[in-house]
Image (cartoon, rainbow, N blue to C red; front, side, top):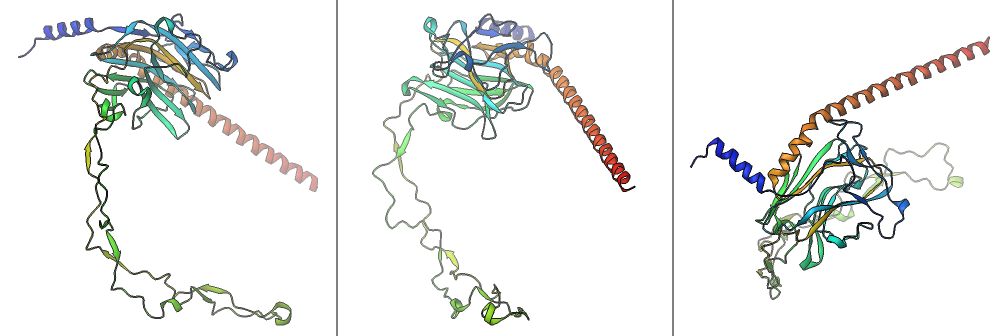
Length: 402
């Protein structure tokens, strides 16, 4: 059955109208947000958040939430418009990140948390229980990943994705999207391009393994798993061990001024023996008794229990927040949306991130070009100054000679 264009538009409108947005923030102000001081930290340990458009941007009026002090902790949170329970629903977290300072070490991840009226707004930090943690984490060359972490109450643990997800490390804005689906799959997108997708059960250790090694089975004692063996017919040649690894240099001559009484008996220096072939080893051949690698038989795991609600990672999410440590400040966050509709999030991205992406990139390129020109100018001035100083020194030397 073919749908008319009008019907498609109508269906899209209905879909959009059914979508629910639980949080949306463009940071025209910080009114919805409350800063925190981590438990065990003092106010002086905490960095100051500020609103700033940065050095390069799509619009000067488009401000973002930015870290502003080096080597500080940062904590800030805001309530959702209503409690989010994604049981049977899509869950989408999307936000924009820019490391204008070229981040060397620090987090830039966002968290979804529960707590409702009991949420510890003033002390929200790393010890505060959360439901989902998502976003960039960079420290040197060893830590460069986009975190995807879910809290799983049956295990009372925060479960990291098994294989690291890529992260953007340049100085431009990037859009990070996490989409958790009711069919227990998920997808991570950066700038609306998929960078990881799969099954929640396969990519995270939510459940016990379906199969385990049979404890009643073990590798037989006579199992042969050596692929190659020494050739029993290969024999070491006679006199092989009589060949020394080093010999006296036949071209060396005792110096004419060598005195045996004063210098001792002269000995020629040694050199590697070209006839020496190293420790003898028999050649290797295929093992005729080789049976291959032994594979441990598997059996069903009695502890395995499926969970059709793996996707329901938000049963009572009420808050969103950032709790970070940054060595070098300057990371900014913008255009956050928490919703049960990927289409809604993508539409919001078109209105915000993608609207400004090319303008920001051009401004960044122009800024970098000016910096290169300024660096080249300073290098020329330094070279000219060094040349002038060298010429003056030379003139002084000539004057002294006169």
